[in-house]
Length: 291
Image (cartoon, rainbow, N blue to C red; front, side, top):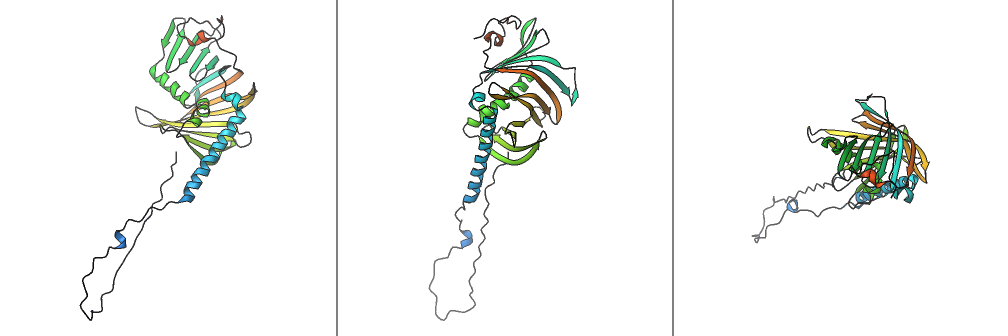
């Protein structure tokens, strides 16, 4: 994120005294004078710069609040759980890898998610807190550490987390960065930076105020190179008083990496807690009851 640079004040002073005329009478000794060039001037505070920064932050916060209201306001902020069903596609270097897979996704905020794939729903990925599991007919096994790290990073920068959590955290900086074109939409661009120096940029449609794009960067711990992740949100539909994007496309360093097309979304239905227990033997085709 861009930061405001302090104003650097350069003070230059010169002082000289003509001494070409000889004194008529002896001149008494005088205390040495201090040159103004050696005096440190008081700092200059530019109130106009501070006012402009405050106004910029207020505008950024207003745009974010407009987006939250467009998504459903308090109804959206207080979603407890969400179920999504659709088809997902993965890409490698921007090229499709496979023919896509049907999936069911179950989320319970703030940190539980279960994703089931195949028509039989017999393969699942489960994330609870900072733990992740792959579940097959052989049982539950921890997922690879690098895959868990990627997932936890995406969750930390997810649209849900940013608009529910980041915006209320003390010390978060808001910056309005002007007009932009995002996913073929005329948009307003806002960046947020938290106290961990993590930054995310959001793009909001100028007419609907809905989020249309999100970007963030992170540095690879191995090669120290920066990576750029982007998500594009399209095809919003009304669901129980909220607006939900039915098409989500993800990009990694400019290449398409994943795409989801949803068929249905339901919220606040109450989820069977057994689905979030890796050792419960939960069978999605024979739910044990909702709590």
